[in-house]
Length: 121
Length: 143
Image 1 (cartoon, rainbow over the protein chains, first blue to last red):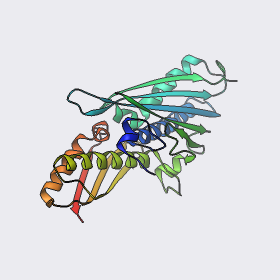
Image 2: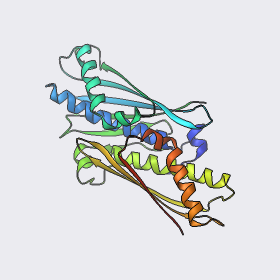
Image 3: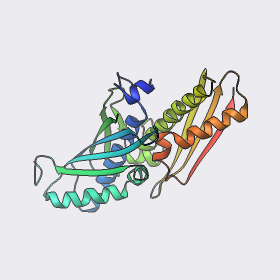
C-alpha cells in the first residue's frame, strides 16, 4: 500500500501513513486487552468497538512527535454499570503493552461507554 | 500543524476464542483486516496483528526520515529497501524491533549511510514513541 509525507502530514488522499498504522495497532491491541479484562470480570462480551486516534504534532525545534493516542471504546455487555465498565477500561489500558509504549512519547486517554446506554441494549 | 489519524476495530467475543476486524481508517487505504489472539501470539495464519502493523508503521517512518536526512545531506536515495521485525512476547509486550535497510544511494559511502540511518532511527516519531522497547537494532548496507 502506498504512503508518502504528504499523506502523513496533510490530506491523506487515500494513502496510509505510520500514524494511521499505529492507530490500527493500538485499537487492535486495546480491543484484545479489553475483551480479556471483560472476561476476567465475568462478563460475556458480545461486541467491543474501539477507535484509536493518533495525533502527530510539530514540537519545539521543528521535529515531529506523536503527542497523543486517544482510545474510545463502546462495549455491548450484559448487566454492567457504566462505572464498572470505565474501571475495566482503565485496567485494559494498563494491560495493553502498546499503551505503555505510547506513554513514553505522548498521552493516552481512554473513554468507554456502554453501547445502547447503561445495561447494554 | 497537528494531524490526526484514526482507526476503528470491532471485536466480537472473548479474547481467546473471539476475533476482531480493523474496519476502517482515516485514509481508507486499509480496512477489513481480521485479527485474533491466536494469530497474534502463535502462527499468523494469514491474519495481521498489532505488532505487524507497528512493524509497518516503524519501517515507513524510518524510511521517510532516512530519505529526508539523506536528501538534506545532498544524497537523494534512489531506493531504500527497509524492514522492521517486531518481536512480541505475550505477557511482556514488544521485546525487540530489528530495523534493516539496504540503500541504493548514489555517491555515498557505507559510513555516511550508516550515520544517516542511525539519525533516522533515533529521530523518527515512531522510534520516539517506541523508545520504551528494550532493544531496537539497526542493520545497514548499500546495494
